Amino acid sequence: MLLLFLSILLIIVGTVRFKVHPFLVLFVGALAYGLLAGMPVELVLQSVKDGFGGILGSIGLVIVMGVIIGAFLEHTGGAQALASKVLSVIGEKRLHSAMGLIGYIVSIPVFCDSGFIILHPLNKALTKKAGKRLAGTAIALALGLLASHAMVPPTPGPIAAAGIIGANLGLVILAGLGVSLVALIPAIFFAKWYAARVSLPIDEETPQIEEQEHDMPPAWKAFLPIGIPILLIVLKSLNDHFSFLRSGPAADVVNLLGTPVIALLVGLGFALLLPKKLEKHMLSGSGWVGEALKSAAVILMVTGAGGIFGKMLQNSGLGDVISQHLQGVSLGILLPFIVAAALKTAQGSSTVAMITTASVVAPLLPALGLDSDLSKALSVVAIGAGSLVVSHANDSFFWVVTQMTGMDVGKGYRLHTLGTAVLGLSAALLVLVAWWLLG
Image (cartoon, rainbow, N blue to C red; front, side, top):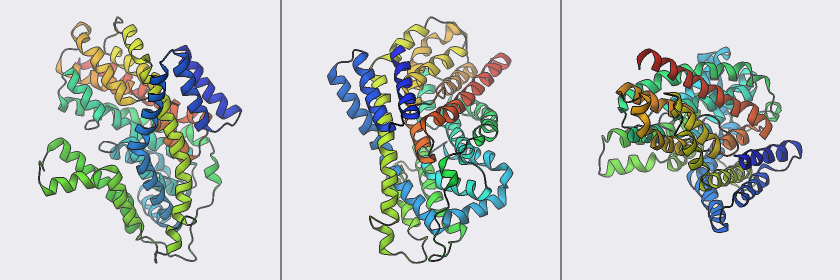
């Protein structure tokens, strides 16, 4: 734990005080942690390969596709056209709440990283159109994505935890929906009244719209590159859960098109329809695609380095040590939350924290008085709440949010990390109250 604290301190001081690039600080910090923790050199090197390759293998191409789609939405004015339409419906005063709810809905079937990448161009355009600061709306979006991702099946973490504990999935869904939606309220207040006070360099940028050369597309057309990928991913998620298409060509098509990388590729195809006339220079290395790939490279490198840091912590055995020390603590419904929070903070992955915590607390549930159907469902939600506390440098989502919005590490901790603490602790308090009243 001391080494973890020193590693995080190194990352913050190196990036904020000395302005060293986050990629270098994360990479060096991960190597230093692994070697000082006594990990074999082979395991340290394997953690570097698995951490970097695993993260980029899962979301690398998604980031690239999302950034290119964003470039076409910005250059053609499609993002602004869509923003004007959305703002006319929801109003500028409710923008933070709207982004939180949009993120919440999208993240039930879509992973947080993919959801943020897909929705970031829309959020950026809405924020500029409304004259708001990006930090507030981006944090509202990120916390909305996290709320349902951690507590509402069919995302893998809650489903796995429910299976290990033996909880009724229907009760988990109902309890997760209730707790996560109410917990999102203080999280949105945090984004609107605290995060929105912080200015980011991106707030000063002028929109990159080439209206002289290209007419702005209609809002419905600008929605397709964002909406179609979400729809495809949702269809695959529903089919995975309910199996309405078990086999055959139709099932193969749904499974293929619903894979995030392919879904974003389809979205990119619709993005190419946004210019009034698609020209070669837009797709060239010096054109829109080339510019997008340059910005994507930075995000990929930093996110990959964050993956190395998280994998190094996982392979060091830190999670096992924490689990063993907390098994003997009797805190009722708070024990699943505390174990999951400790594991999440230590090693970065919410899914790993949920699965590990469920394995630790499952045999302890009768002794804790948590063996009823409702108590088991609330225990799963408590584990999900703990897996939110807190997202920081060892979590790839932290780097996706900060790098795409232009936050430095210090602001990332002040806004994103503190925001996840608000969300997770609010959810834990709600679970505790529900257990007292209903358990």
